[in-house]
Amino acid sequence: MLKNAFHHYINNFRGFTREIWILAIITFINRAGTMVLPFLSKYLKEDLHFTYNQVGWIMVAFGLGSMLGSWLGGKLSDKIGFYKIMIFSLFTTGISMFLIQYITSFFGLCIGMFCLMAIADMFRPAMFVSLGAYAKPENRTRALTLVRLAVNLGFASGPALGGLIIMGIGYQGLFWVDGLSCIISISIFALLVKEKKKVTSEDKTENSSEKKSVFKDRIFWVFLFVSFVTAIIFFQLFTTLPLYHNEKFDLTEFQTGLLMTLNGLLIFALEMPTVGFLERKGSPKIKIIILGSFIMALSFFMLLINVWAGILVISMICISLGEILAFPFSNAFALSRAPRGQEGQYMALYTMSFSLAHIISSKVGFEIITRFGYQVNWFFMASIGMIATFCCLWIKNALVLEKTS
Image: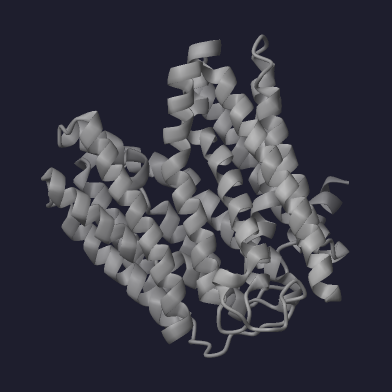
């Protein structure tokens, strides 16, 4: 029975093109090498001796650069092709990582981080467009899930390796390793993957046949709001929740780490089989996103039960299940919604919604907690999650009307 279960699990990884596997491998190398990010605020505070206010402003510059990069990457992918943007972005990011370690002034780092992220995050929308080009139409959502899996595995292994590097050769070592990982991963891509000029546009069943500006696509803008809101509540996992674990239930860093590991293990074990099953079943993407948004909102309603530490485990399981359902199919919906030749613009706005959520999530969460306490923050996050769910229901009905009109 265990052998059959393993066989079914492995089957979910079959059917991908060679290019998709190479994209997953370079994504893993790149994300495993992204060691600067988890230690960035610590580096700025302890190594460069900036105040908390200065660190906050540098992180704001970081987020704004990310938004600009996402927009540029999508726009330029449509103009000159995703392949050139991916190579330029990662190679230049690698060189920039080598250089930014020598910038130690406050204003210099604000400008440096803004420019670095503007270049680095050009890669994300271009990479999403490349998946649309290299993946077979029937397993495009699974291809997106495979790359998400590579991202999660890279992020899981990167910080541990980063800690060892800091202990061995200091923070500067992080910049050298991160830069090298960018250059090595994109060199592998350039050597093994040939540029594909035309992006196929099959499986755009949720896309209107008439080509129009993304700014006039009302359904997509409501969808972007849903993505923005679900990202805001998901990012609480890395900002307010770890503090809540300690302040309310006296959990140690190790116990909080175990809860985070539970999230990673559930994603690793369940996301690909779940996506594979739903993809084979032909379930409409928006219906799955509705369910994912609802479960994510429910996980924060559960946190209102603050008299039993076990609720943290149940809530974490729900957050993970919501992530498994909402995020892969949101990626796929955004890509399938884009008309031919406009994939970059659509994926740019989609990735920008996450960048904006990353900036706002911690600010909003900590502000509510400071003024009103944790319970109000959980209720607020759960409530906006329900608003996102109702918006998904509106999208579902709007798609039906769009097809009949």
